Length: 395
Image 1 (cartoon, one colour):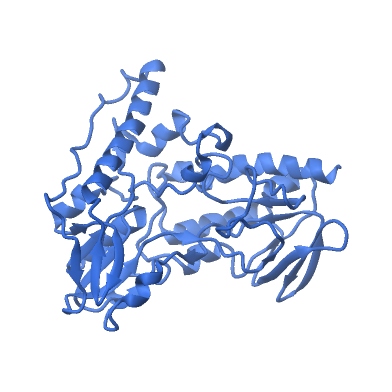
Image 2: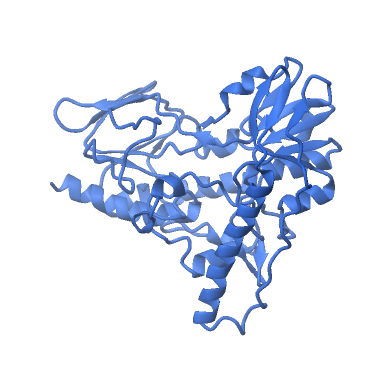
């Protein structure tokens, strides 16, 4: 957004609570890599120019990439500046209070992200006192975990990656599986993200979707970025020895209660994967790619035991740690403008906050396109929204 505003000669400032790329520096586990290949980190005026376009960036590499981008575009960043309030000014515009002073502006872009506060169910408080609890924000590596079994709640990209890493450390892992989307890392010889890019899946717009509210809640694909470009799905995990249970529905008297929908959840995930791959196959056929890539193939159906357990005793000492990989929610505790809906989310139309003219939103799931929450999606959204912002300033 800063690049696009500078191109339009719009004076602006970026306020950052920590250092540049602060969340990547302070809220990620050690082994995490981007789920998107390096070539897909395309930003306005900047892109990957290394010798591993099909690799997946580590956290130090991601931090360096964002840091370099800020330097290349001379972004006017005020670091170590925490916003404490955004409120309406007298007349038009906004007042932004920070721990370093006050700013006044005609427009404001909220780019604080969607992953500020781990979303942990209320019944987490009912865990027995001897069990340690973590969120992905707190987790760094298996060495910080107590010896003994680990239950991971949530089976999207984060949950499956942590289950894989922690099981390899020698601990018994139980994975509580809710809604998820299975996906192969490589399909027909190409990275899945390559297919989603060329077939236009990532460019699908928010105003082309029948139920955009639902689309914005869909969990991340079960992908992982490894040098081997390996697929990490539930079959991979159960093959290692990870135990699958249904969605954690509650904890009562020290006993975990699991939903009986595990088999249905896995069938639905397989169906969603099949629909995505069908879309890719149709695009390849219509555009003459069938002769250039491997023939279509499908992963074997997800394997689930006939009668998955509906409960687990958490008082017997087998489970020592629970990790809540149950998603995030944004933090708008500093936003003193009446733009939130009953769920605490900002009401907007593709990033334009209609209820508060001159206010914009960036970096949220499916904001304007399916790829909005990816690094690769920020540029197109910024071009659109900076154009709207410029028109607003021009009256």
